[in-house]
Image (cartoon, rainbow, N blue to C red; front, side):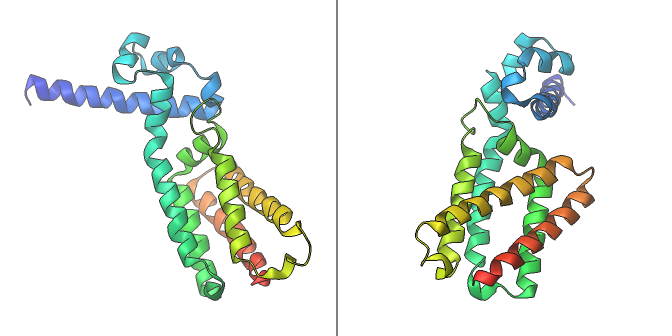
Length: 200
């Protein structure tokens, strides 16, 4: 390996380590309470050297989440295209539960960061936006069981959407290992989806 190639590999290793340590720091403290000084110290580089890789704390946080942000939105659209009233067979309920559980488990770190640790960043409103999207989805697909109760369908769907997302977040944060995440997410999602099917 030539000197140039060696330096490039070393540079990539340092960049990867910065991202790894930054993710840990943000998960522990949230974006606002984290500092590039502490991240640099944990990586064992100077703060100035860290800025050679990432121009700001915001840029570093964005590097961790930009790809996930796009992937998560695409995932929801694909899932909702599949989730219609006629698709609520036991087989499809199990498929949807497993699909969502595996996606969140695979992106557990990013899911927690964007939903719970992003205050002070451009992603700060994403949790609220996701709850609104979930609420709109539930309202659109549920039968007119609440239509005779003026305004009640909107309020109950907002509660359901909020509780749904908070449950996914709580499981992601508190389970000790990936298998536990999968098992608990799948169990909760089956409970949630099968409960919702009574309205179809």
